[in-house]
Length: 124
Image (cartoon, rainbow, N blue to C red; front, side, top):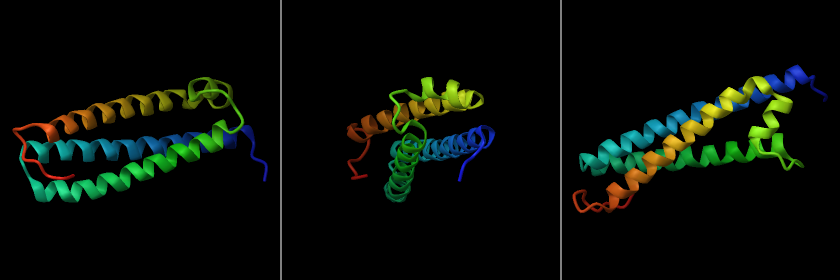
């Protein structure tokens, strides 16, 4: 089935929007994890860990699907590919990159908290 360039651009935009939504959910989970770590809430940490693992797995699958769908056979990065194929989605991609950086920062902080002597050592 052949899709028009407009339909393809709309599909790209929808996929990126879904990825951004999933990243936002992941960031909320990380923030919840951080609050639980600071509050030494072990029970909450265990339930968050499961949700976090599922969300991370979903995000990895979405990223892989994006790479296969958009960049297959291309040496371009998303930053180079989007202006050529779906320029209206470039701001959405930039939001994804910013949200991913925020997630990485919170996750790094949470890792430090887990290693902190002030937080009980609970496997997460």
